Amino acid sequence: MFEVVIGLEVHVQLNTKTKLFCSCPTSFNHVQNTNTCPTCLALPGALPVLNKEVLHKSIMLGTAIGARINQTSYFDRKSYFYPDSPSAYQITQLYTPIVEHGVLRIDFEDSSHKTIRINRAHIEADAGKNIHDGDISKVDLNRAGTPLLEIVSEPDMRSAEEAILYLKKLHSIIRYLDIGDANMQEGSFRVDVNVSIRPKGDEKLYTRVEIKNINSFKFIQKAIELEVARQVEAWEDGVYAKEICQETRLFDQTKQETRSMRGKEEAADYRYFPEPDLLKAVVSDEMLEKFSVIPELPDQKMARFIKDYGMNDYSASVVTSAVEMAHFFETMMQEGITAKNALTWLTTELQGRLKGEMNITNSPVDAKKLGALVKRIEDGTISGKAAKEVLDYLMENADDVDSVIQKLGLKQVSDIGAIEAICDAVIAANGDKAEQYRGGKDKLFGFFVGQVMKESKGSANPQTVNELLKAKLG
Ligand code: ADP
Ligand code: MG
Ligand code: ZN
Image (cartoon, rainbow, N blue to C red; front, side):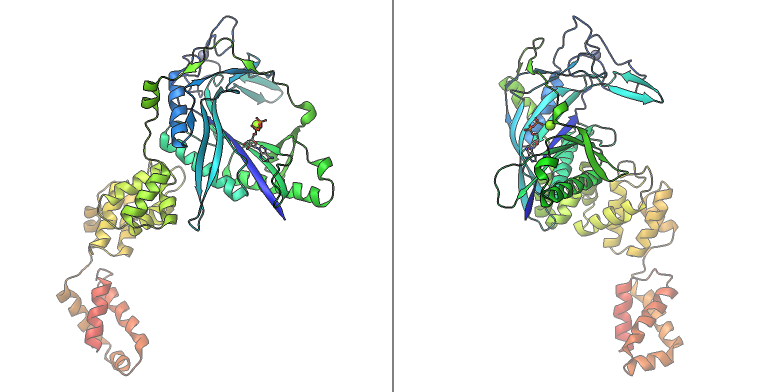
């Protein structure tokens, strides 16, 4: 009966070495207010100079989303006063941004896709930080003037699920391009969610509410669901026009609600005007060619994995979603193993053993080692069960796969003679059961397999055991 309409604005902190308009370093975990200069402190007379690396990274993003790159773009002043912005304005790109009209594909679990349009991506300067400490507040300007790329979608998403898929894909692209850390907790990937509802079939857009700065995918999902419920309820109670207004709301994770932060009546008049201290940003043909070189992206990598490794869409999208994961997987595949095993051993066995601060980039077992381990299962040297023991050992000890197999005595016995001897001994010791089995008690087969595996201390190749027992028991 209702349709949900969502548009997203994402602020990505670009990982340039220096700030947008000055040469201060962008690392702001330093002593407060030390990474500053007259420009980012907005002292009178200091002039901004555009950082070329920011153009480079913006153009990479524009290329990745198939957007138009404006070879001439402009900067504008957005005026507002806030203690963490000493200039009392923000430099941004309102009228002609660097990147316009791109697209981003989202993939559903059932392998269907949808294209979300991106209206624009523009460059702007970040503010500093207010630090509230008991009853005093301080201002740290280390972050002031850090470059942001704001990526604005069209209102094309129709559910919280679609919004999350869009955000995860955008996040993944930024990591693949390595233009930002995109760390939500640290604020280098900040999301504003615009939500409205409308009767199904209606084409016009209804009043939107903007929910600001939610710092995890899980909370974004929750905030959207709560906000949609609030709007639907207002509609059904006949108070939609009165209660739903264009405003900014905050998501309160402890109270599990959205609430008004500032309403329309408090909406700032930003008095936008062209930034007088900066020249227009001109990208030459030569620069454009150089800056639009980008690495293989998740969609392309996914298509290649499906084609080369015979993976299904879903597995391929799981393994290509994070660039570190895709690289890990590809390195494993160089051992000449099957994609199915590589995927299981990466996503279930290894990731299941990564605890606390550990992740696949600092894992004690690297991709080459894990690939080598899977190789030893596939060539019959060890069983899958033994491989888990090897992996446990390798998580604690720096060693190589083959010597651990040796050390732990896990080498699988595929030597028919040796297994045959064990089979014979087990059958001889359990003559009564062998009789019963031959008499039709099929269930006893498992017993014999179990006994042989036990006698061999788990080292016998189970397939060989099965074949030999079948033959011997008739
Ligand atoms: P502003 O610049 O004031 O934030 P924009 O028109 O640029 O406004 O829109 C900001 C975001 O809100 C965009 O992502 C857009 O897709 C989204 N949006 C606009 N109208 C609606 C609506 N009715 N419902 C949901 N999202 C919307
Ligand atoms: Mg907005
Ligand atoms: Zn500076």
